[in-house]
Amino acid sequence: TQLLEQSPQFLSIQEGENLTVYCNSSSVFSSLQWYRQEPGEGPVLLVTVVTGGEVKKLKRLTFQFGDARKDSSLHITAAQPGDTGLYLCAGADITNAGKSTFGDGTTLTVKP
Amino acid sequence: GAVVSQHPSWVICKSGTSVKIECRSLDFQATTMFWYRQFPKQSLMLMATSNEGSKATYEQGVEKDKFLINHASLTLSTLTVTSAHPEDSSFYICSANPGTAGTQPQHFGDGTRLSIL
Image (cartoon, rainbow over all chains, first blue to last red; front, side, top):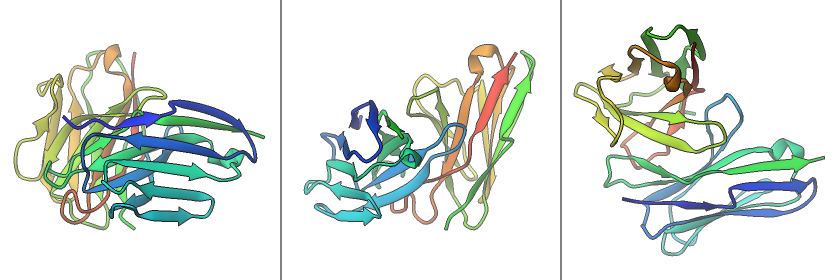
């Protein structure tokens, strides 16, 4: 059974601060996705990382995939209240019928 | 981009009622769709994998007679919660992969909030 540990589970910061969310596993994934979800809505895809060591940037968000494709991080620079939400990492395994393994989620609150 | 539509978005009904939730891929075909359940401030819990033209694959602990899944076409999967009770109240979300499962990220519907009175 593949497990994906996500930390921290809850994070409350002031506007302008930086933060990092981590996802770690002992399993290798074909790819890893980061999603953001707002209350009452479905998760929205932020990024997919596929290659070990890959770094992707999306405005103030930086995503990194570990060299061994077992872990990933999401770094947000100068957080804004609009960044508030539930962040989910998900590892996909092409050998497992396309199922994704989800982390436990990080609830981020950015206070103005 | 890939769009997944889920309907209805909100259901309130009496205990004992059966409720059907639809999940449609609007601009791509999906041989596989996934159904999740989510509790407040928690991650997604996979309930079952819906396979077009064949039986769904249920995760351990999920009652297949309680949560009926039908995937009759390449763009539509349905989840029916039979004889729903208050403990079935939750947020149900579907997802689908465009292309070969596992090579493309999952795209999610907007979810269905089910409240059983």
